[in-house]
Length: 113
Image 1 (cartoon, rainbow, N blue to C red):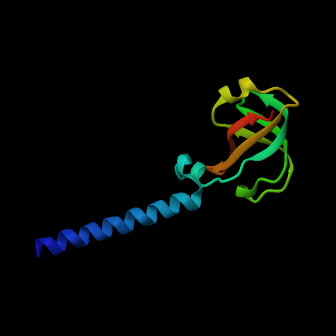
Image 2: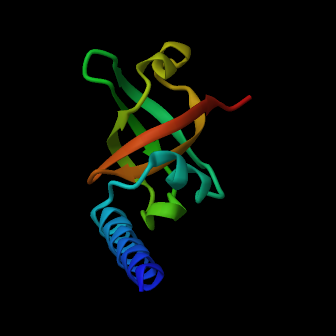
């Protein structure tokens, strides 16, 4: 009987954890490393503005496939402000963007040669 109770408790815990993870994903708060691994293509763009104090970058970009977003100019948040140190206005870049906690962040960026 103890084995059955332990098994039932484990099943209930597993179902609860699975439901909680599904809610995190739906809410956009899943681990960013898991999100990064799901992105298969980088997007291209041009640096329009850099704002280190606000940790933001403005890009004129082509389509961002993983976000189902058409090309446009927009402001992105930056996860790591040090990425901006290597950029200048007018640089052509390849970048990866992700939606995290309801905001769109540039998570990787590099200049194009």
